[in-house]
Length: 303
Image (cartoon, rainbow, N blue to C red; front, side, top):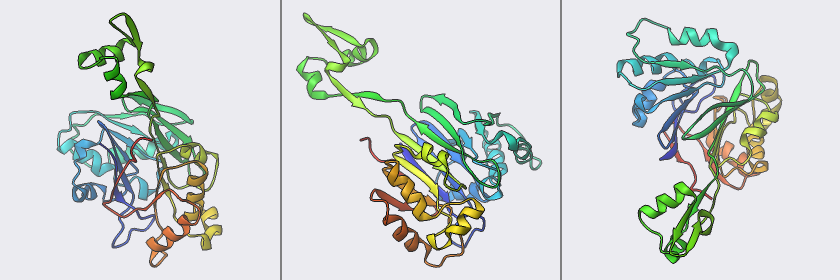
């Protein structure tokens, strides 16, 4: 299963219909929770996902709407006796804030939290999921965006396997060894397969346009990106270190993004969803999602 569970879509001020930030990426056996704001624990319950589904926590920065849900998530993981480690990535310069959030109140602390602060751009984790990378963004405090990159692989073609008489356990043997003798012929993996590009997911929050935005978005199958303002307030967006919907969509178009998920909306706009969609659609022709709380967005099928 590869999908984004949207837990909250507001920016600094929540509304009746939009909770503070929170985004759970379900990627095979990995559950990455990005920027849990206040109320994330309850939003997860409403979305039908358990805290035990989270094994990695990624904070872009330490403004409250992106991190005040951390105490609830960690304490709930302890209450539920989650038996796997919770790996936490966050800007290293905010280590004191994470420490306060980690121990914000009295509770029976059972969960193992592995702190892996991010100080420079580059690879922050590797695993069966692929490679998790970070890139610096531009805001009023230190911010890192994240990108998950799955390695390229190969896909077996059933018709070619059948042509060479390869089936059952022999397929696994061929995949493991790279070659397989079939009668008087040696068949290589390349003879019965085709390239399979790895998938990419990018997460960009609280930033004005900068090199890091483009680096993270490049070739993403899904880009989750802030669109706090509309173009009419572009000057304010730049001043406060944010993006407009049009800027976010233009980045997605230029970087070849397949599914664009806009979020982190200002409370200042009336009929916001339609206005954000209209503005973004003017420059982006791929799949466009104006995020709503509790929405589930599948990562697009492989190319």
